[in-house]
Image 1 (cartoon, rainbow, N blue to C red):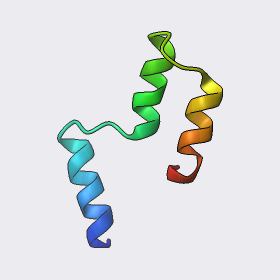
Image 2 (image 1 turned 60 degrees about the vertical axis):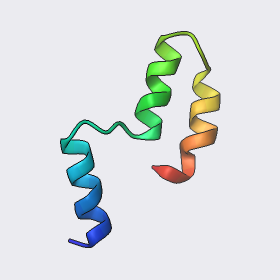
Image 3 (image 1 turned 180 degrees about the horizontal axis):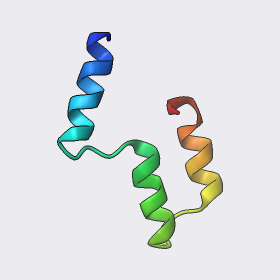
Length: 45
């Protein structure tokens, strides 16, 4: 496992949300659209 992957795993374990996860919450809160979240997070996976 590369250092980047270890860092990401540790951050998630400590409660970090990905940009896409934050976007999904914004959709549920009525703050943005699904299209915008997909467009802005497509390259992040």
